[in-house]
Picture 1 (cartoon, rainbow, N blue to C red):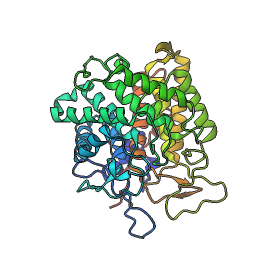
Picture 2: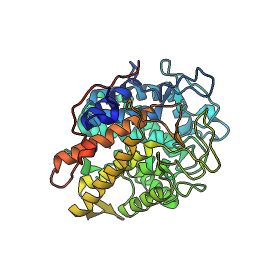
Picture 3: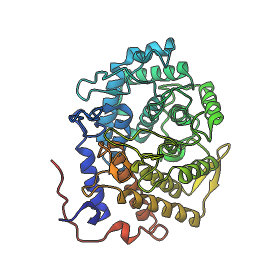
Length: 420
């Protein structure tokens, strides 16, 4: 029986999508991983993290399954609506981030009831709000506005107010640790606000200009405050972290930093965080999943980071230009674009090398051991996105972007036996 690694790229992406769809629930959400913790070794991950749902369903867009993506975002809307009173309250009276965790919308909920699972840790994670606003605006600008109602826009306006009241201040960030100022959080929120701020910042992405600014107006003051806060932190992630894998989000999906800063962030992460099995989240990270025991100075490596780096480099190769400080356009030569494409291939191959024989992306490796959360839904999604990006670029520019035979694996295909 052939394994995942013996198949063609097209079939590997199909298998990867099947693994992702195993984690999709009838309401359109994705559990973080299938791990149930029935062995008593840690927290169950077969629940909804709001961030994970949005990043997990992102793959559907790259596969042309927009209805599935919209369905997932409708579920996220329902989760926000369930906790709408908390959002409104926090938009008026600022809760204490550290000591009043129960006054924030939870970062994870039960996959059926959508109820809070615990208030025992920091739920105030600004990047969740930023990603939601960014992708909701993106869907509308791609022509899916008819799927959303006046009530939905009222909720988004209250999220805008929440962001304005909470400010670009300390939160728990993508890794749910803190609170402290995080450049990845500030960039996510700024990207979300810029999507609704009708000044043409993201117009290069769309064939047709659809103005959505009148639905949820964003003030120049909010944009200026966000830029100032982000600039103050960069290139650091935070006061305690000089660099962090989460900063890749500033390149993709948000594209919220200039080209010079992209180069700095990529160099920092590639030089200091890239390992054999994946990318470390940040220096000195002690999280390694339940049941794994790190050795001296050993830090977990996340294959997700390889996918994310592949996506970032594929994006640099895609457009043929970027922007310098002041949004001045910089043009790339084909030689530069080919170099970015080759870097994307390099990281994609490292990613697939560290996937399981049945096509799963583990949350992490500690040495050669995989963690419990295998597959990890948003890592699975990023594998699909990175592979589809390379496929699309090669198809669009076959003379310039050579998708090597060892990536395509042009062999006779066979089915992989999927787990029950």
